[in-house]
Image (cartoon, rainbow, N blue to C red; front, side, top):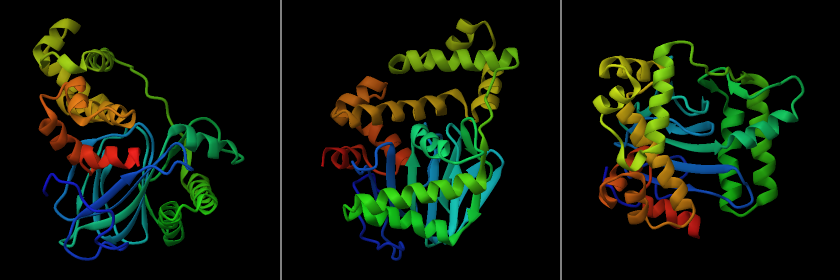
Length: 288
């Protein structure tokens, strides 16, 4: 896939055709929510995670999602559900690729809806990776349609109704992740170091030495706790921080250096792979 900007819907709502396109944006009337509508064929998302939740309605083709519990193959009418900080990959599961309408609600938005649902206590988490639910899938696509048409009342109503339906049927308390071993503790400490020194991160050997462990022991512990090796986690974390900088109006070239990428092309490559659009397209949607 070319590392260029894609159009806002050239492939149609169902994702037919052989052209990849994507729109990743925010609607001011739906705070705490990112929206992505796209058709991908060759693009493959590397292992990454999100600060918030993922609710994706597949509208065409097949999406293949790699999760800690196995691989999900989701077709039209399916809704893929991913909790915060769960590492996953995504790619086409059919030659025609896949099209989807995705909601990325923040933890605060999910908690707000969950607070109004009787019987759901604590921080909610999805209990399934995907469901076949054409009604909810359609509602998700209609959230996108209403937002694109500037219909705030319809978009907000459909969003909250869809999220409430999902939480009622497919959610429970999100289990707390605690470090129960020395290895898990080392992994958590390593992540904190990488977070603090993102722009000038140490090597694996240097990081292990600082923590008083060996490189391979740290690598195993980090993979076990976070579902990916430290360098993959760091790339994902850099992209997440770059997104926050772009949200605040920072130019892509400045954001690249600030998070530790060598230059803007380096940021472009990883950002596009993980987010699904280029930094320039992402920033323009926020500035519009």
